[in-house]
Amino acid sequence: MKYHKTTFILKAIITSLIVINSFHLFSQDNCDLLTYTLYHKAKGEKIYVSGFDSAANYSPSYNELLLFIKNNTIYQLDEKGNHIQGKVYASFIVEKNGLISDIKVIKSLSTSCDKEAIRVLSILPNKWRPAIKNGKPVRSQFNLSISFS
Image (tube, rainbow, N blue to C red):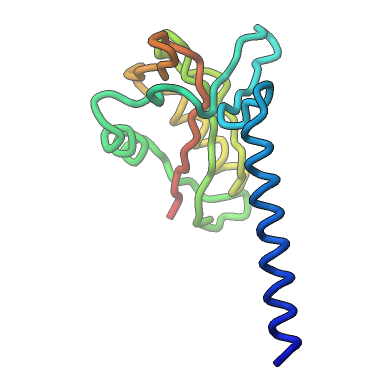
């Protein structure tokens, strides 16, 4: 019984130290951990992943985006003639003007499914509203998955 009390006390002390250390990290003036940004190396402009006032969105709705992807995806056989099932996770940049760029697969399913996901995203109608930060449009990263089944 005494062992369990000691273990509980040690866990409580360690948890307290972690929480106190976390408060210290978030209280530093020069450390903005809540706004995580990526920088596009070619242009040197920030690409926001979070920390914006409103996220980029597809107009008129996210459901229309999903319907477009569903209706325009051609589910092909893979290289061995098999149907591959699963999701391709893709990422792209919604530019300040609402166009998309830099389409990439961030989690692959198969070569043929990856190519199809990129193809479908590249033909999306330009109906994007860019992310807004401090009242101005900003470049932002948008991630989504495309299902193949």
